[in-house]
Length: 178
Image 1 (spheres, rainbow, N blue to C red):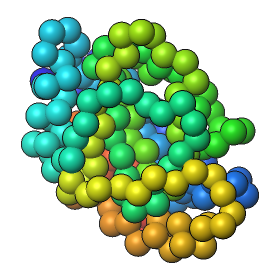
Image 2 (image 1 turned 90 degrees about the vertical axis):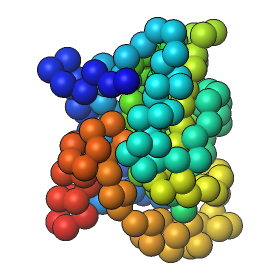
Image 3 (image 1 turned 90 degrees about the horizontal axis):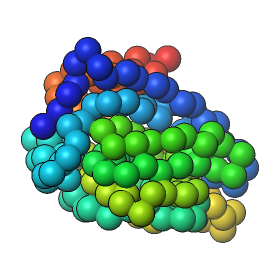
């Protein structure tokens, strides 16, 4: 189900409002390297892991090739096959390479975009509490509503990979209190 242990490595990426995308100045994007088992049945195992840890409304597909963000929910993406280059934080954000076994948790407000993927890319996505997210594109016309939504999104109660504790719970709780 998960390799969360000695091989797993954690990265954090922080993004401030860039004038086009709100991003999330408080909560970092968390990347879990080598967190999932890969191979046959990996997508189903990932979906079950996320559900077990309270991240539901799962889907299996890819990542949109346009900048978008969610103002009403955080999102977890598990890469169960293939690889993808994801631009995080908007047009001037970071380009992050993700491969099979990696997981990324994207806080509400942070833009993300597929900038190239292998043909076998398989992504499992989910949301804390199974909340259905909105879909937003960088734009000024609804920015104030998006900003109000983002600050109201509650912190998850469980880490999607590690459960009751883990990098997300520890990192986001301390970031939210600073």
